[in-house]
Length: 194
Image (cartoon, rainbow, N blue to C red; front, side, top):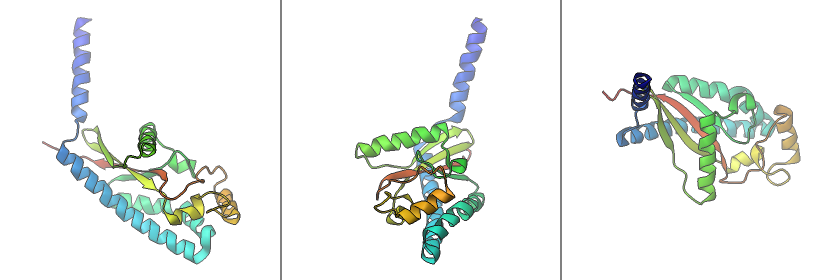
């Protein structure tokens, strides 16, 4: 029994060490990489969404988000060799957006920090020796209110009808500018430190 306990402790110690904490240099590197990727994806999505809104209002924008945004993000993820997700505690498309347990913990942490008036910063952590997770808050911008705003104020009844038609189980309304809408969640390969 004593031998088993020593083996179990050694295995636990090795497993904990093998995932390894990120060095300050790695932290900086993966934060920059995550910011660069989310900035590019965000700019492309915002540009396409703005065009959709201008061309056909919320009806066109909702179609873009429903049918084009996810494949676009997937294409960019492949190009960068990462996994890219957006998630929230208030879901629009539960099929694609439901947070993992860890993502939910990060969302709750960001919500507490925002409520306390703290500035929200990206977060990186080692998942295992070969993988890094990157999380970044997503804040509501003026354009977002067309589809995610407060019903009867920034979200018109007509637009809300379109949203409910496209997403019958929608929970993602009631937001105001600068509210925490959700997070970017990236899974990136970790380069060997050896």
